[in-house]
Length: 109
Image (cartoon, rainbow, N blue to C red; front, top):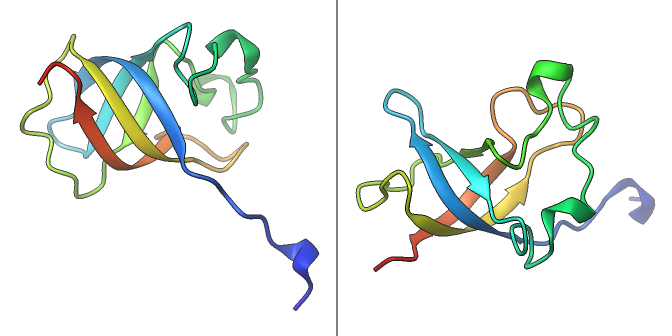
């Protein structure tokens, strides 16, 4: 095994407001906070070019797509602030979602 063939991924924190909650698919669309949306950093520090396989799929911090998998979304409501922990999806391959959540919390509770 060659250690240069692997990369350690760290959990990423997202902050923002929920735009929409998927009904048929386990997915959220969110608006990331401009000042502290990704790991408490300004989203302007990040470039999203190349995140998708083509232009329609490039990540958009105002419409960031989160795969929620089997997480329970019952307490989440559109327009409310949230915090999510998880992993950013593969660069250049993201078509349906930009992020895979491990946990999501409604910050109004």
